[in-house]
Length: 311
Image (cartoon, rainbow, N blue to C red):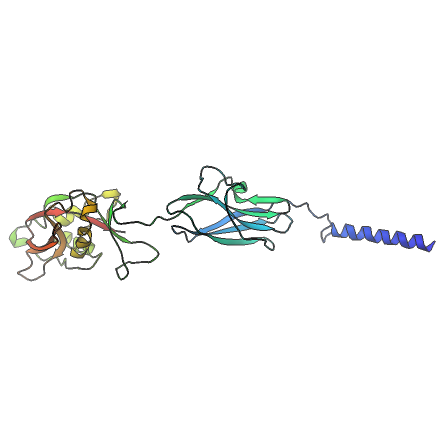
């Protein structure tokens, strides 16, 4: 009688063990695994050929994460699916939480759709499933001299050592697409009223300060080359100004690219005065664009005006 009794006890013990492993700690049955839930958490450090992307698993679906990563494509009209060709895998993860990756080899100036994914024993979870919309971003496009940009044409890109040069962010000068005048006076004030305007800034990006100073000393209704340049509204920008000699010389070097009559002949006013002395107050500097000759001319003669702005 003892052997059947022992066998029955062993059988009950096995049943209890199986029941234990099929339940949570509180005794309830273990949930059936479902697809995990995941979202795009951030897009950062976008360059012309790469992006740093983050995902976040908010629900593991009651099962270990076997793989996680991102799908991406240049098709931005449809939702990302697991059939998307481009993929980057992070690999298995312990639990939920965040993960990230750097995607390289992208095409400059291109729009991309991207979705994060996580996979468990039940299948794939995609951020596009829950958001019903792909996350979209565009890679940066490096600008080049001669490009149409910012209301005009890029005439100069800052180089190491220049003001505002940044190895990661492009800065430079934009010239207006065409001349603002072919016969503007530096000032049309009478001889007795011609004064030094303290427009003596000579470095890159300081032509704006010269322009401000000229307008300050030559208020309306006096029309000056500086006020004509300032009134330009290419691209609806309001920060156009008359370049100083350093800036005008950078623009002059690209006269063949800029076109619009620029460089076809004639003198172009700079915003730079010759000096502040009694002898120099009547003169300002200009440049003969075609041959690069610098001219020290009477402020009342008429010359060309080409506005610029910085970016």
